[in-house]
Image (cartoon, rainbow, N blue to C red; front, side, top):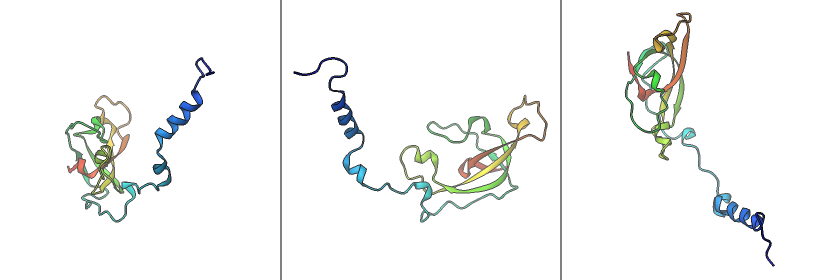
Length: 137
């Protein structure tokens, strides 16, 4: 006679669900290398050096965008280069993210980013922005 009630068949359901989530062949294969760590992939050439003045491009395309809306159109100074990484706007859609894009830490004056900012004029905000979002200022 079968057990009735809310717990009936739970153990079997869990095993079946677990098998559906991770196929056996996927559990035995090694994971592919992350696109952000592929060293044979050439990176786009760098255009900026620390101290260069840049302006963030003021466009608003649809989709996954890593550059914050509030910083678009603002000018800042390259603080440092952070290396080259897979383009997150491509990686978000399952693409390769190639060519890797240089990533920069850009420093902005707080009172330039936020017009109503009342703190010290020396306050800054640093944001990491990919090269394809930057133009020389």
